Amino acid sequence: MRTTPETVAELIARQWGDHRPGLQYGGSTHTAVLSRHRTAQAAAARAALLVDLLPADAEPHIGVLLDNTPEFPFWLGAAALAGAAVAGINPTRRGPELARDVLHTDCRILVTERAHLPLLRGLDLPGVRILVTDTEEYADLLAPYAAAKPGEAVIGTPGPGSRYLLYFTSGSTGAPKAALCSQGRIAAAGDSLARRFSVTPDDVHYICMPLFHGNAVIADWLPALAGSASVALRPRFSASAFLDDVRAYGATYFTYVGRVVQYLLATEPRPDDRVHSLRLGFGTEAGAVDAARFAERFGVRLVEGYGATEGGASVQRTPDTPPGALGRAGAGDDLAVIDPETGAECPPAVLDAQGRLLGGSAAIGELVNRGRSLFEGYWRNPEAEAARTREGWYWTGDLFFRDAAGFLYFAGRTDDRLRVDSENLAAAVIENILARWSPAAAVAVYAVPDEAAGDQVMAAVALEEGERFLPEAFSAFLAAQPDLGTKMSPRYVRIVESMPTTATNKVHRVALRRAGFRCPDPVWWSPPGTAGYRLLGPADLSGLLAAYAAHGRDELLER
Image 1 (cartoon, rainbow, N blue to C red):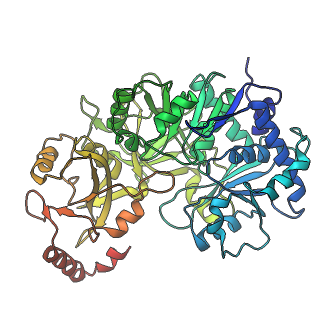
Image 2: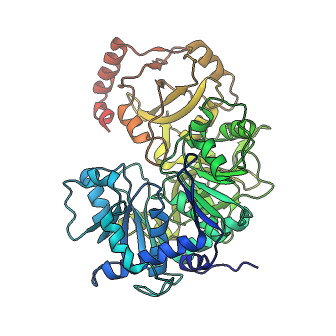
Image 3: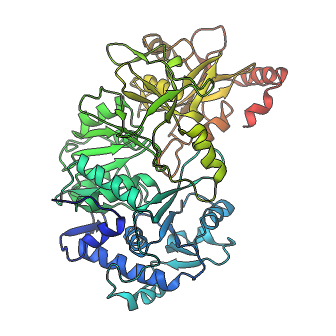
């Protein structure tokens, strides 16, 4: 019987002497396989190197600036064995921002690869030693440690409370915050998912999401460790290579975030779309419409989950969870949906027979954990910690609504809240409605300032191949949606070639909001007091800008 692990180090050590497949990489053209024992051996060697290289007065932190190469899980394992912590460094960050991430997390060692060296050129990183993994110098450094074993080289004995991850949260404003994750909490999370999804040594977890982000580590790599499954790496996500990789590796499970599911659905259908070993996808933000399309096309069930890297709250899916809902509060959590303006609990949502939200603005609020929280704080950021834990509660920063039976439904980030004519709206709710429009391949909803007060709804829409935006058809679609409130219809519709995304494949809403309706793409709009949509032309734009200036709100267009 499998025992519950107390640390990630324990999970790494369990691999020693196990010669079953542990790590695959190289893709469909030249797949390579390492045993579980070999991966533990690689982690032990790097742990020993780390102990020797890390200055005595340094925080035990390693920055890892890598694609999903084998070196990334090797260093995750090394940190666990040595009692150190990994800071995942985002390769889409540039210049001073990238340097800030390394220095803010007090990393005295930065592990990278030759492909990312141009990112470091010219950066001021005092006291930081850079290890370049795909070089002879690196191989020579590691060679003396080839015989190292788990547990031989430690900075401090790894325990449940040992700092393990400093993972940056993908906030929409300000510098990213480095969330603290201990070995005990992370090991328990991986073990819980392995049990929930009945992970066995016959499973193969396909990791195509970036390992510098918590999703890939906590929801993909760790459950594989806990269930003795193997992992298969994709350096960077590729929709066109997804099925070929899945078949080459015999993958059974993958995780996703953001728009990954839409990218996969946008690939050209093939007769063998259902010929594969994949049984489950686990992630966030696929949406009920796209999840159903994915299951119909690929024969794979998608399970939506909720649990932030910070660990402050989780929602557990149960067998009776209705479509569209994420589940109920996890064990020990006292979750409530709170109106952030009044502090009062929001009333239950009213849903129709199809599970669609009716008159939902009063029901939508911020998800708050009023019970015990696993939140462990942010590295050197007491202000952000205080904002998360004000009034003794954990405030998630996410919008939800709850039905009469207590099931919770995701409604977006608090940053995605809109206020139209004094009515509060949630972007994700509007997106879920617009996603039903068959010509749309992807939809993102966000706020743009109203000329006089509050916000207006703007939607960016990427169309299916061969489709055109037909304003009359779009207006007719909107009119036919029974759960589209009177304030929810987009004032502006921007037609994009593809949706702008962050490095973790989430919609880049900051870029969309910043551009607003002054963008290079065609924008259709519904002027106040008129029906239907027309192209936003130069005369319209001039009139709008004059209206903003007349109300003293033109500076809001620069936000």
